[in-house]
Length: 133
Image (tube, rainbow, N blue to C red):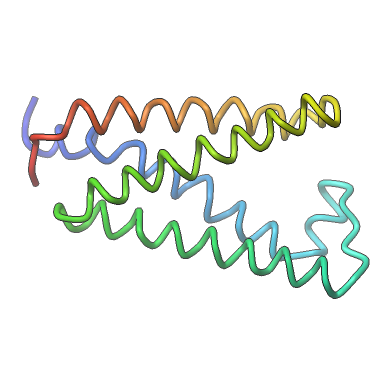
């Protein structure tokens, strides 16, 4: 495999995370999308504030992933953050499933995707710990 191919696969988990998390952040921060498409009513300023904070948290984390793709010296930290982000989200969703019941299909897909991306990121961290840009 050539050098560009190695870089593509090395960064694949971060790219996938960016492509999923940035649009999700925007959706979480836009109450009209939530009510129209996800049947979630944002009925208080406090809930709107919480969702916008989550939106910006997701975008901020995504910026670290982008830096990890662009600058080799940040790849490991970006990957570790990706592992933490995806697996803690999945853990929270699993906890909710146990305590609250099965959510809609979109959220079931979310927990599966977060587990896959989180575990794939662990694999990437182990596989590429010695490969550099």
